[in-house]
Image 1 (tube, rainbow, N blue to C red):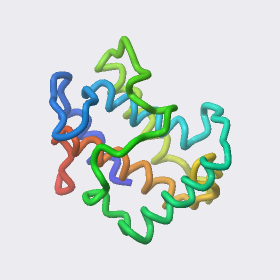
Image 2: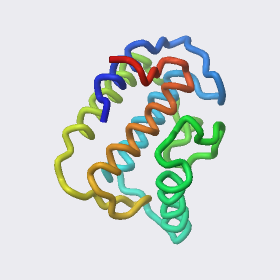
Image 3: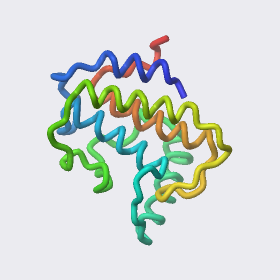
Length: 152
């Protein structure tokens, strides 16, 4: 999952970093990425509807077969689900958000079950789960110019 690269990138992020696109602050981006993991791990109940399943299936198809897991060409300024819309966040403490995201990424990295059933993408294998989280997090770290795929 490139856990070390993600953690190094998070640690290179500053509270006053400006995004290369979008409107989130660095604290909001960390909050957003953490909420994404909470959602994906089903740690918070999310009431799905038919559109959730349809959009989720189309999204996974898009990641696999259109983008071929290349998040560098993922459309910038895409809309997000209400649950992890950064407009919902307030009174964020940057260092706490960094710590939460690093802990969440460690939890994903240590996930050992063969499959995960998720409200959004349905049943996904372990590799897909980790790749979706890695790609999403790397995409947003790149948004703030701190993700370098060549970091060792």
